Image (cartoon, rainbow, N blue to C red; front, side, top):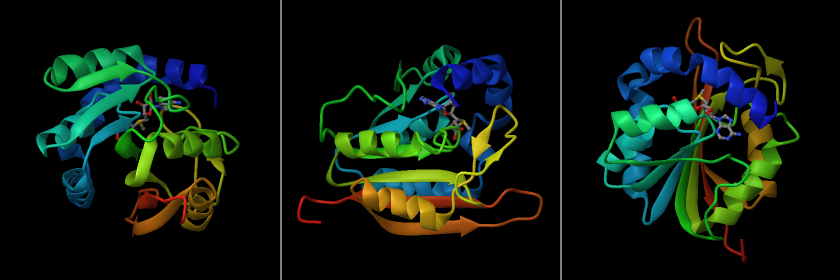
Length: 203
Ligand SMILES: C[S@@+](CC[C@H](N)C(=O)[O-])C[C@H]1O[C@@H](n2cnc3c(N)ncnc32)[C@H](O)[C@@H]1O
């Protein structure tokens, strides 16, 4: 999926998405705990990459993180700003976060990598590696399944990733996997969260 396709698809569903999924209360309690705990561990600036209407960005900020939300859908940025006026949001793409090299202590990419075509995933992970300082960490949430297989997500085409394939991509782009959380529940696509740490030049 190109950025323009994703932008258009979410723009037409942004109000609906915000009403249905735009609060942390709508998320699983394990995810709320995981993201809050990760946010508290950050030592320096962070980005919520693909923030949608901004609820995770605000949660991280409420836990003391120096965080900014970025998204490519203008309506999401407008909604995020009006819902959480004390939190920073701006338009940007995952492919170019607009921060200097090694600036960030962390990046949250919660269900935002899912629309990247398989060839684009390593490009975005390399951009994350460029922006995150050594020992900084990233937290990814995605649907578990056969690596790179497309499926008809409610908004627009998305792609499954296996833990093994995502871990390989992370290793190849300068991260080491620190935590893996898998959850399977009836009538839900399997969920994975991975915390990975930026390796130092020495590894
Ligand atoms: C499934 S929603 C998740 C939103 C939010 N992180 C959450 O957990 O509710 C995917 C989000 O990623 C954003 N997104 C997808 N591809 C993107 C890209 N290439 N650059 C920036 N944002 C992107 C979409 O606009 C959308 O807000």
